[in-house]
Image (cartoon, rainbow, N blue to C red):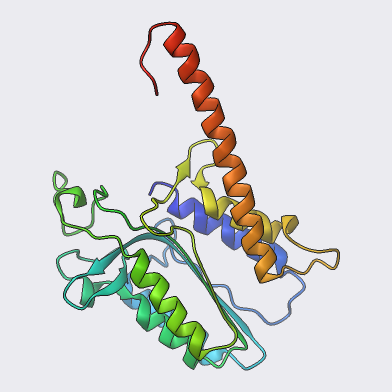
Length: 243
């Protein structure tokens, strides 16, 4: 997932722009290009800070861009941070259930969580404890989308103000595109906060946000697929291999 840092940086800028008239707000970001690196303890401390500060009039939004895997021993989805060890996910990764529990305990009027992650097997990425030659593609990794969705439903049943958006559904892979330098869904998520999904009063409704991301993503994919089909047709006519 090459564009996680850019996803976070640009989303932070969009949020700051969208909330520039808010006098009381807290925006915390963690990624590899700033001192506040996404280490487990650092991220947990930030989460606790947000939960402690939240009031019944507040809205909490949590966004994650990265890898997430199923810990087979505890059958729980784990979000992977900078110091996560894939052979010890439960204690070195961040369980999604823990985040959702914090959200419901926060007392915030609205709680939003957006997960942009890769859930499929065969993923290739290095973590700190792995040698340069060893890839996660050698590990047995299961899709965690069903567990993510189930946790979201359980949390929604407990909290009327809870809203979740999973950018990778069952057996879909995180999609990234070099021309936009973002994960596809995050790109349109950012556009929402830049006003593309706002109404005449500059209000962004959660349902409209979802529809905007869904519709624009599929329009983009359809256009891209049509372009690929055209290129393949041209290559076939020239006796070349398809893309």
